[in-house]
Image (cartoon, rainbow, N blue to C red; front, side, top):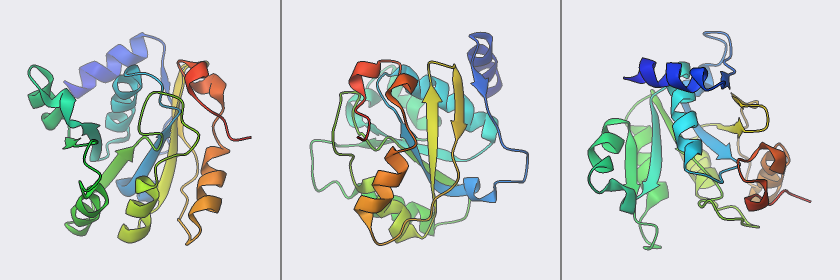
Amino acid sequence: MKRIWIAIVKLFGWCLLLPAKGERPELKRCVFAVAPHTAVSDFLVGAAYLWQLDVNGRIFIKKEFFRWPLGGLLRRLGAIPIDRGNRHNDMVGTAVREFAKGDGLAIVITPEATRKPVRRWKRGFWEIARQAGVPIVPAYIDFSRKEVGIFDAFQPTDDYEADVQYIRSLYRKEMAKRPDQFIELN
């Protein structure tokens, strides 16, 4: 099924920009921070990219999407339901424990945490990477060029504001499917 989906995404004109095999070992154990996130189709294109990279990508998706008919499929694809209405859902702790189980895990997070415009990104992706001792790999889905790719891996420091400012500077609103829904860093 994964190969079919990758072929469909490519058939629609998407270019999946992949590093040379074996050149990016950190991709097997990292936090992918994906932006801009302005449409559900980000997930559809992004999944093809992760499968093409051949990483064990897991993604947090709000629990409301896990109803029939999508619930079973999302679980098989590695999605983890998250209760976004519960501020005490321990998403960071859950992810850190998953990293502690073994080497082959990549958590995929959209730091905006919503498809609506936000001025401040959620802190969870940074906390997960810092506490688990894994790099953040900024990833992008560029609708203006119909390409998906990654920027250089980034090891989080103890300065959240500086780290997020650097990561946010990599993205442009023109990349988004809905540019009016993405707030660029000024």
